[in-house]
Image 1: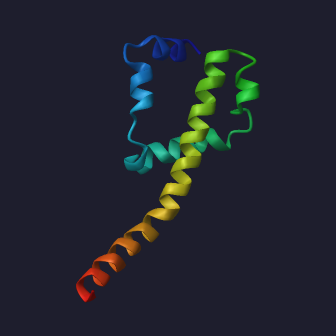
Image 2: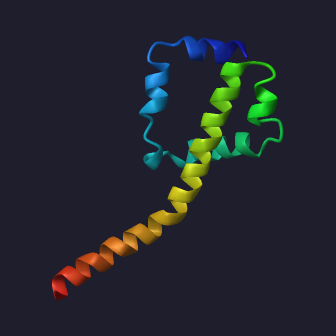
Amino acid sequence: WEQGKLLLNRENFFKDLEFYDIKNMPDSIFLKLETFYKNPVFRPEIVRAGSVAAGSLCMWVRAVYDYCVVYRALAPKQRQLKSAEAELEKVG
């Protein structure tokens, strides 16, 4: 938790969170998030018991992971759509 407090006090910490490029998250970071996400005690209601700030950060991490799961599942379909649209543009 001491490391977490240092992180929260870092200048621009909240801007870094707000503008983090989750669409281009490296697999290594995604897998680390997955480890936290699947940990049964990494739940906002449990983490919040120790710290409200940590509970909020836990919610953010879980939301980012959920978004990345959906985004990664849809990415191939989006590429197919762009390809099909380009093909249609050639025909039409």
